[in-house]
Amino acid sequence: MTLKSGLLAIILLLIALPSGISQILNKPNYALKSHETLEIQKFEISETRTVVYLTLENRIANGSFCADRNIYLIEPDGHKIKIIKAEGIPVCPDTYKFKVAGEKLQFTLVFPALKAGTKWVDIVEDCSENCFSFYGVTLDNDLNRKLDEAFALASKGKAADNIILFKNILESIDNQNLGIEGLLYINIINAEVEEADNVNIKLWYNKLVSSNAPRVNQYLKYLNDKGIK
Image (tube, rainbow, N blue to C red; front, side):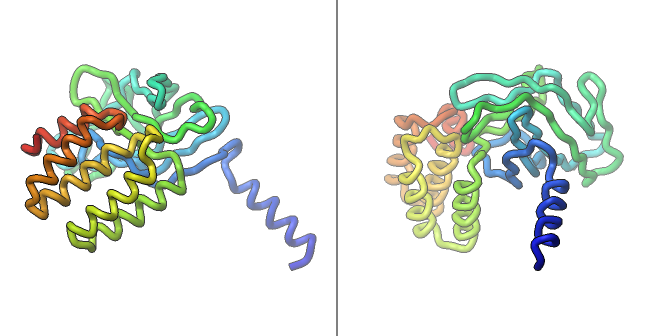
């Protein structure tokens, strides 16, 4: 490649990138969510705004969905960042009415910029009913890669091996106040349930109770709802 053609390639690449985007995360991991078929497809983070791309699959007849005016990104220190606008979805009380079961709706939520270096956020819709939420959305690409690899291995591995796998990741991020921490406890406890090891189920449940994991009460409720106490 000549110098001239190399410079041209760089220029074309810069033109192709969205202006001002400093970080893109495709399908970031999260700890818990409210709606089974609601998924985060992408996060775009820049110095001026944060854009969240989502999809929702309808599974019922005459289903509908809308975005409340009060949707927030919540940073690790509890600071709330209110939505600027929603695109591709009506703002409540207007609703999008699905035509058939299985139809997918793609939409985006636009927020002001996050604080530099933010490693995770919660997405919370503050409304009266059927509100959606994601807890512990991981905004660190390296950690997301490690988690993706771990979940891929866990899907093929034995429960005993998965306990070690998630325990190692938990130990590597302990005391970092990361939103994904509670999910690692849940995966360890689920593996212990699969092993039918009641002693260790109680041990890890108590470790979660005494941990400093963000949103710990949400994870305990999730386990309690499954009959694990």
